[in-house]
Image (cartoon, rainbow, N blue to C red; front, side, top):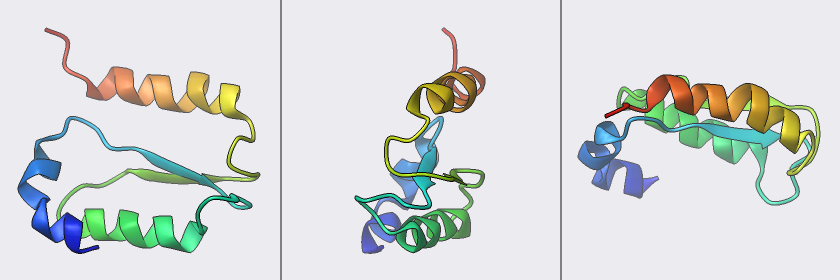
Length: 79
């Protein structure tokens, strides 16, 4: 997670970071994402991770409609 330390200032400038991971995700270990989210929290970036039951693409439409789009709508600045 050296990149988080290296790019701390840039990461803090982002309007939103959100990660989610299935408990059975075939592309990444959930523990890895939890550690990444914890490292982000350690530099002051919170509420970025959520796990869900299923694999990488499980309940994708549900997650987009009820999780990702509302999150981005709340975080992005409208100019």
